Image (cartoon, rainbow, N blue to C red):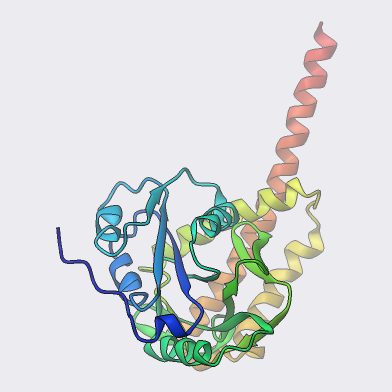
Length: 278
């Protein structure tokens, strides 16, 4: 077994202790970078959804707190790992993310003089996409609330986009969380396809139905917002590609919402025909 990296020990007894929480599945290409960036935390907890690659073996060289559990969804998995943490302050980091040196230093400095009335900290996330750091458009600054007191925060939102909700004051930090989001365009499109299916099913389950106005207008609004209003054009071709794929994802999401309603009507029609035949 490789030697386990030592966790940061500077002034740990003088500040609130932090548990880093990481959920994984087949992330052997990313997980070492992620865990290296968390070595300063007081504890690292990993919940893995039965990876078939070397993810778990790599994680166990960093921490003894590695648990394998069936996938409960993006929100469910976050609420599960929250219960496994030992310390009161939790830092949620995805396996394809990295805490920058600047963000690490800012967190440690902030916690040395901790304001007892602040229960959550948010910070910008910067995406590395096709060899370029994205600095404009919808992807930056992508503010994430990921550091919070467990008694004042919970995971919620709508699948597949989990969010942390905090009761109490939240402070914004300047340090950046790095995100190595997609390997290539195919990976980007596969993720859009997967996420659009999840989102459409969630909307359908909650009673939302297909509307032509959503299908025709929302993709165009999404493109205009990301490419023009948020100046995605300043990222060059990367910015154009991101805005186009995001717009396409909105089209697909509402098309799948229409499809779910169509399938429901087909099932009902088949049931009525079957009932009339008896």
